[in-house]
Image (cartoon, rainbow over all chains, first blue to last red; front, side, top):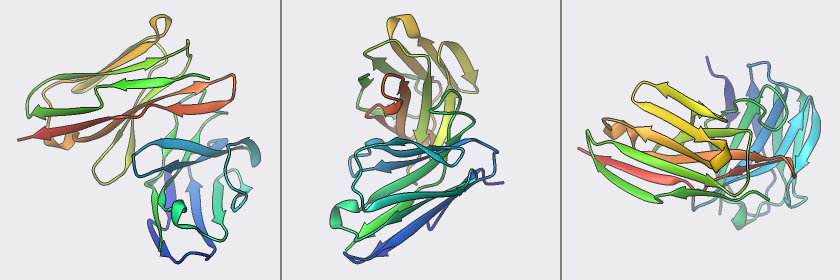
Length: 114
Length: 109
């Protein structure tokens, strides 16, 4: 059974479009995260939600807006996509805030903006 | 904030060889995790190891928090071990998760 699942796995879109990436976890975890992995494989946290509340918001453009309808879901909506947004985006979850214990990652969404 | 370094940045091994990957952090930490990103991009948890030693099959990890490092040992490497190995910790001063830059491992038959 998939613990943290993201959809879609691949996303190719034109500049200026708006797109969403969905994430769901069935682990009963309280905390969910979004990470961005750039072309050099560097992983950086974007957002963290604990029980549907935003607890970390890194320096991310306002075009990125996370939405957590419940603690099992954390979706990422991106407005006015730019070429530099091309990256792999990972969703993750952990039992409690900011990695007091082990975190689990989704399979990633490869976003390509053309 | 905490800086995380990993060494070596790249490693090529013959199948069957052993290796040690290192993760250094600039301040004491109470949280450390090792991940493997396989060639298909999937991030897989290896160890949650804030201190001490753990073993899982051919892999083991040791963290010495007081000396600010963690080691990942891979024994009898296989081609399926190829990929990038990341360590990550939490900078509690800023409530941030910090990843190291990774060690890219290629195991050749």
